[in-house]
Length: 288
Image (tube, rainbow, N blue to C red):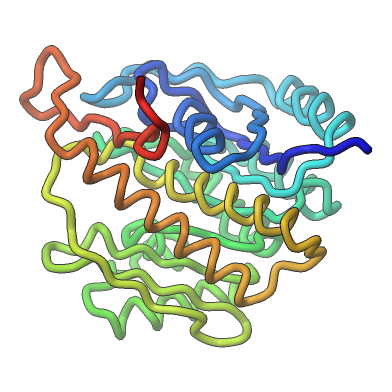
């Protein structure tokens, strides 16, 4: 009798320093027990100090990569990360709209930690109106949530404001919203998960004091996507209901917290001043 592992797909850009993008996604997929596949949208020259250059991949080649994976493998869940142009956003939205991507998580990557803009201005509108309506889950941080709601919307500063913005984003079409509170100024980190069924869960965990936060958004969205793929396979679930999604998000958040704590004191840069190192994606993997 043949078997197969859970399969997840990442549609994103690269990170040669290994902390974010496709590189972080594949490590996270492996750590969470899924077979990772990819479609690369951009070649990005970056490291712990930031992005220095972005080399976009032609849309038709991104499409060819997707055809190669989706025409050959049954993908249980997909996440999108860096989609820098309107045409790329529309390409991925069309694939999701046709139901090709399985459970679809959108990590709305817009600006790198270093401040380098990763999304063209005219692509923001496409994310708002084309990508959000076909997403099963979106995972914005506080600045991304505000930008998705409008050019002049202030960043949420309280749990009540977070909940309001999460509900406003939900009205834009995604089936669920995980609004991440890590960009709040201090105190414990609060995250809220809402869907059309209401507030599924509110999460709170201690903030990890570390500069090594490069790729945390990529890592979390990849972890949640992997968890959904695993749980769908384990339970033979065609639909991802509120309870399965809550469990997947909780597992993803706990994995990220462990990865942050494990790498809190790492110094991987030759020039540590101002550097933001990666999290420890291998935290759960036995070292020999």
